[in-house]
Image (cartoon, rainbow, N blue to C red; front, side):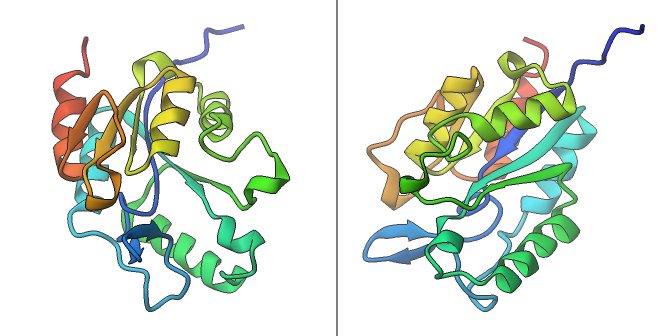
Length: 180
């Protein structure tokens, strides 16, 4: 039996990293309609560069508005198709649950990262989690990833291994640390 290839990955939160988060009362939320959903300029190019550098790129996203009845399945599916078709990420994992479901996939738990690692043969210790919230940083930390926080007005109290401006800035850090 052959040795299984080990991959490195960049796990990306969706809202605030790939598409614009919706700010309501100073807090970040997921888009709830097709009209609110806009891919961030440069996200697709940064993802292609990460893949060209040898990384698997997986989206890991909490979407509790599905369980809360605030986001229709049709609109969520449309948003997912936009992410897949515009960015060409390798995989998209979603937790559709709310806190009361006590699932193991909902960030800040590392369930989606562990699932992606198992599916794609990923070495988590050599991988990165890029997000814009404390739940992203905590999930990445629990999974053993290097955590990169995208700076925003709504997350000034959140820490990560790095705090950067956008996904392109994260790309620079990831490529610089690729062989360490």
